[in-house]
Length: 386
Image (cartoon, rainbow, N blue to C red; front, side, top):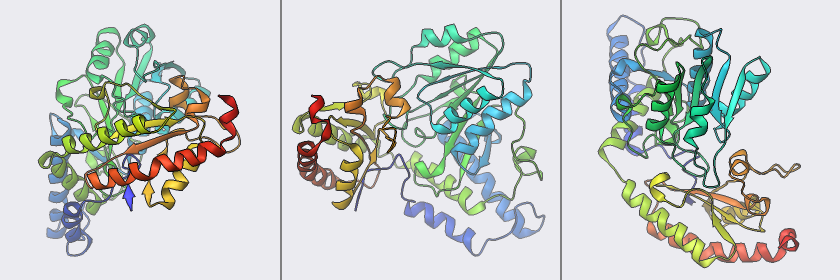
């Protein structure tokens, strides 16, 4: 199998699995227990907390709180801030956020909150002047992603944070799920107050995430119960997964493979655009402004789901960038916000590479993809739209 869907999830690294194994057998105590076994589990948690803090450049490991996933982290950040600011009913976010943020903000609109939805341009980039204009005295929260999950476009969170600080008293939350482990992050040098991450995006297991909470930021708990995580997030800690997250952070720091992955991504992207007619890149052409592993390409007049199925039959895993609904045939909110034409949006494919991809796999993909697209284009009902 050739796996080119690493933005959806990643393989657990062997080094991560090795770190976890003792905590799936020999070390099984409850980290809240006072006995020797419990203390050993607690030490493992705190070591992992230090590893997470190191990867994202936090000032203090105590700013890291473990959660179950990125969606929980995002939900807690947003709801937790709003609970501490009951008189502030204004939120600023973007039209291209992940569903964990976008759908929650839609729900909050029904609960009486006013949300300002910032647009992006055709390249998927944010207009910082529109952010500045959106800020108000009653703005409780600004929530933006660091890297778009579909296009890989990076938002300048240092600049965004500075604008938020200079023009409001809002808390600044960043969904960093797609960026951690792929680009350098140094939160201590930014104005980011809350930062969400998820382990399964960079070779830790599914079911573990974290939320960075800058010292001094007040956040109401989302889960009520015991005193775990300094009373901030109740529930018995998932120690094996927490250890796995820490090991994945260590691996990301020690084994920087981003340059090689980017070279493979560039090869795939360049050759697709050169070899296959009616293709277009979705996202800014300047690769320094995108994740090094991600390429979203539209195959105009062809249905992306059909491309995915044919590639899957060839043993190649990708994802559709358009997420078209089978009945409404609407393209994704991200591509709509970028004003990608329907005939291109419905044929978009996201290729997302990882540390286990090889040049031979890219060459194999390039050898089968043109024939698949040509075959589907010849049968396409969208041909008449040309």
